[in-house]
Image (cartoon, one colour):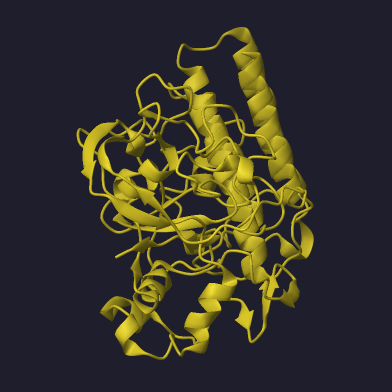
Length: 409
């Protein structure tokens, strides 16, 4: 019980750091399809927690008309800017009152499944915390006041790791300690051929070679869909030798991972480099399999819980791809978790025997239309990610903190 309450408090404290200063002139922002108005999104976080933790069984919300305001399954995206929302201070009061009541119910024992729904709501809040980072980047707002990457430099790594492949159990194992979403259920055997994977994510310096070679102008590197989508000649937020990080323009850091590239751009870069994207099965195998014990790890570094020395998570900035050597996988791959999400070649599809969980809008509506990303970014709260966690976005999205890692052909 105490661990769950601590988790609820930690998620809310993180949300406050990344979003509670977005009132006033920034609480709505322009109407764009890739962001939500912050005032609405903060209310939605509270609504989701209340809906799943306090209102199951038909109970009414503590906020009149809450469903008509905050249910993302029924409130059209472009309507969220014109709803009669409570004021920004009232929105925060509603959200925090919900948390107070949830913790009170947890302490009292609550329903048998309350812990599951509280953990679901916490991870939902964590995902929105990362989305507030996206909003701040998209709209050029200042970065949230979070710690910069720690001083965990590592030896420079390059080249590929050799992975033997073989039989591998893809997906989450029943009874594991991590919270598991329906799209991760359950582990099932796959057979992988031997392959070679880059030890680090693709860096800005490497991607600059693609840009300077005219990669954005050469049709041969692009799929039909990617070429039709492409409307620029360099990555999003790049301008010559500088790039925009939130509200600041900085020189392009050569050793940091390329970020804000779509799946189409990742695919085009691979064609230029004579490489390919890993499948998600290859990615999870590379991140989690220990060839000595023949066992699967919860994280690349093992089963121990995350610390700031192991991966760049829930922070304020990117780090060099050579940092965090203590987080290496058993195969010597660096930063398989943290720093930047990594696109895979795989389309987001259900695993065999898929059964949707109570939050039915989470996975099932997006099967077949989204691509899988793995690993987490610097802005991802540590509660969300583990080696089996699957993220998913449409292949055109470049606003997210996504990059890539490649495999040899």
